[in-house]
Image (cartoon, rainbow, N blue to C red):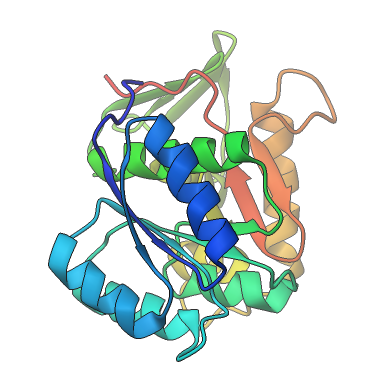
Amino acid sequence: MAHPSGARVLVVDDEPGILRAVQTNLGRHDFRVDVAATGSGALEAYNRVRPDLVLLDLGLPDMDGLDVLRTIRERASTPVVVLSARETERDKVTALDMGADDYLTKPFGVNELLARVRVALRHAAKPPTGTESVVRFADVELDMERRLLTSAGKEVHLTPTEWDLVKLFTLHPDKVLTDRMITDAVWGASYPAQSHSLHVYVARLRKKLESAPGTRRHILTEPGVGYRFVADGFERP
């Protein structure tokens, strides 16, 4: 992937030390950085500079960061990565369900932050359309038109539900999908998000996708939140 040199990032946090550290480290990697310490300041800066990505703290002094996220989502699909000391499952699920692209709990490492930023920008630059005829990752190939999956050159049978799941994952590589997001997309909004069926289907899909039994290379569990599809060697022709 080409380095997103010059991408503009808005960093929103009320802790001066974190603002300085994130601004400095992003600047060293050729990002253009704007900062805000309040929710109102974040929305003003967002409207003014139209950033390519927002790093958003939830614990702001004048409003909840979720309200900032909600307002941004009402206006645009700009990638938003939450940086927060809130680490409960409910906080993570709520932010992701409201449209956050990722969630990083404080304290965090600079390298991990940079990796999350690059992934979010990559997805924004190439939004999935669902029209690609063939998708490849590792030794797996999905032919969307023929609804055919092969692993290590061998055809793998998928049920209709398993196919819908794997297609959803490949449309959102490296992004956390909550249980609610997945069940809404595959079974519909009336389906219970905590149904055991989702986890059963994911377990079956893992057995068919993974080259070694019991491994979790492609579909990772985000405890209490949902799943993340790891796209090693991901290709769209």
